[in-house]
Image (cartoon, rainbow, N blue to C red; front, side, top):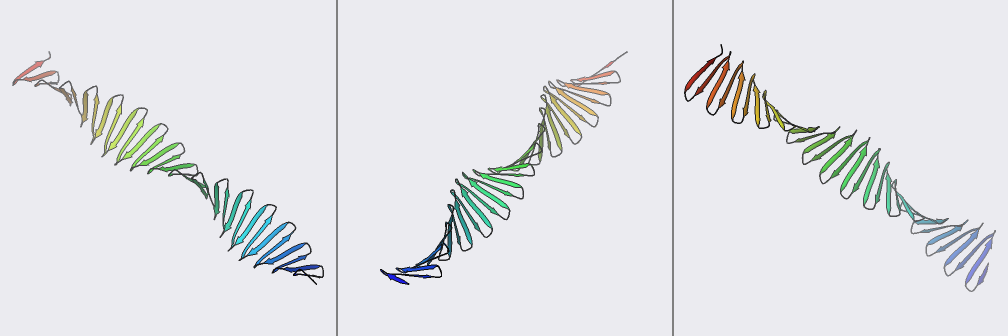
Length: 270
């Protein structure tokens, strides 16, 4: 043992110990340990470790690690990683990633992405997108869209729309509409309507109506009626009737009848 200028040194079995200003240092087999104000430090093979208030820190090859209350943190090449309760988090170039129970989440430039059981979700500017089994879904401003096997579907304010092979279908307030090759069809309260090349057709309670170039035609219980330029015509059981300018005409079994101003006229073909 030696005491010099208040420093006490001792060497025993190759271990050197010194006490200076309350700091205790020891060197054994190339390991240097020191205790100062409750902090224990050791240096071994270029690795520095310290224990302070229950926090363990180590520096090795430029990697800093710390363990505190069961949380392990490390900093390497500007990447910060932490493990807490089985959750791994890392921050690299402004990107935050976490892995928890097989779920991977990342936040980059305000975009949040997560992958869980093969489902990828992302949230960007209030738009949520998910991809699952080849189906892409997005929700934006209350509109839900999905793409599956080339079919695009959207739901907006209770209106459902789908596009498949160039056919657009929509359902709104129980009205179903479809557009295919320029033909628009709608079904409402059991009434089917279609518009094709300017011709409108509707079927209601077994009555078929069509409007083309201002001509309205209807077929009901075998009776065909048409209205053209103010002339109404009907065909029933082989009898043709027409009303024009107050004149009623009918043709039955080759006999033409007309009524005008209360006068009945007959024209019989011989």
